[in-house]
Length: 312
Ligand SMILES: Cc1cc2nc3c(=O)[nH]c(=O)nc-3n(C[C@H](O)[C@H](O)[C@H](O)COP(=O)(O)OP(=O)(O)OC[C@H]3O[C@@H](n4cnc5c(N)ncnc54)[C@H](O)[C@@H]3O)c2cc1C
Image 1 (cartoon, rainbow, N blue to C red):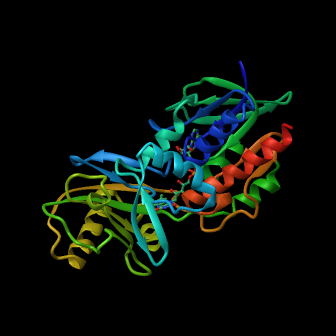
Image 2: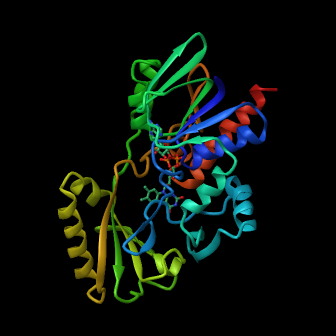
Image 3: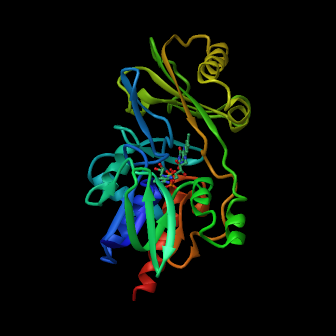
């Protein structure tokens, strides 16, 4: 069967555009996601006897996210975590993935399917997954990080346009998830961001309400992550723990685990909020709207508005 829309990627931008299309009755919609769950870089992991957010830690309450925020508030799944000089910071006590899961309700989503081939013929897009399944659609929306999108579209779309988007580079992130014998006070709010040095941020998962035992998400700086990314995992984790215990001698580490993001945040954004890179083939995500949850929403909202206009 030919779908009106297929969305590749169930991160916040993919989920948001699928919700908008469904809400506006623009046609049948399927979301295809390579991972076991939804959320993309809005990620929560259960490990070491507790729960950690190991991707986005919070969202900022701005106009584009207001409607989603109101829904999360009504469902009781988001709360204000802290206010700093940068403004308000909101999160979910059951982990940021909970917010993505609530956006996925009522959508048709096919998980653990990685799209490996895209082909355009007779005005129809054909997609083939790693499980050799084929899907067909009139409109294709791709929300994966640009390097993954570019790999998928090589030889399929205009090479010049593709070259233009592949100029967008991403920072990498190395992250240590640690549990502690007892709480370590990093500051009153439980979240610190660093302007320089080895770390990007340290986030207290117990203070946030995500873990019920003392637990921290230690996100290393873009420079550190770039430099150490290709080392073996055990060595990376050892290096992070050595630095952390030297800087925080009171920390009594109980358990530890490493998480790596090859595509963390785009270093620059594309000039448009979305891109129609070929007929009825749209690219969205934080590389277009800005490198945050808010930016990813902004991009998908802009495409939603465009689709409404073009379906009038
Ligand atoms: C460590 C870290 C910390 C961050 N902290 C914050 C924060 O505190 N606040 C904030 O606002 N932002 C933060 N961000 C940024 C924020 O998480 C992202 O901007 C946002 O989640 C991007 O959403 P997206 O939908 O554009 O992309 P993604 O979330 O990357 O979604 C893309 C989806 O596509 C899927 N996919 C890729 N290729 C394929 C394929 N071929 N077939 C099927 N599926 C595919 C992926 O699995 C993924 O689920 C952080 C990011 C990281 C990594």
